[in-house]
Length: 265
Image (cartoon, rainbow, N blue to C red):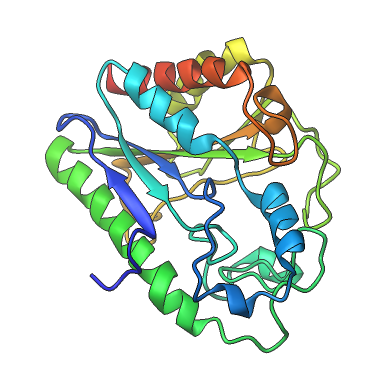
């Protein structure tokens, strides 16, 4: 495979588990060969990473995996979303392109210049985006072959106050937002998530962020691939922006583990 070394990791779980905890936005790493294409100063880049990184979500997923009765698999992005965003469409289908945040970002969270106008996204798509998509597709296919189904739980976080790039910034911002897909999120999975995260406070449905990630080879075609996005409001477990985790992290990991257990029961 031609991906950049260590740009993502698949952490094996139990052979009988259909669950993949997908953690796409937890890393702050910008590889040295990518850094020259970003116009921000080092200080400005660190601040942008504070705003845009889903800090500590990889730790939440790791702790949940340790707590779960049947260990889920984990697919973790080791490169920052400022390199490429693996969950965006790489073409005109992506609505975030309107604010310079398609698969390769050209604008910051505050709608300032991140990469120069006219930047060719193709080298980054080829080196990072497509290998990631292929590997995630293979991981889902492996779970289907092993267990007859796959369940992708997408682990994200979002800031307490909306950032200027957000398209739906006037919507409520509950402690936990559950993102769904009409085809890939069955009612039982959504009900299990609501129950699992009830100890963390109110859960919203597709507000302020909706949808969930499914590799395109399966999207809208294989109902055996279930998917749900879990968006956690950052003040519930960390100091914003980009600060340390707090005691809320353990509660969230326990809730995520409870969801995994419900799926595998």
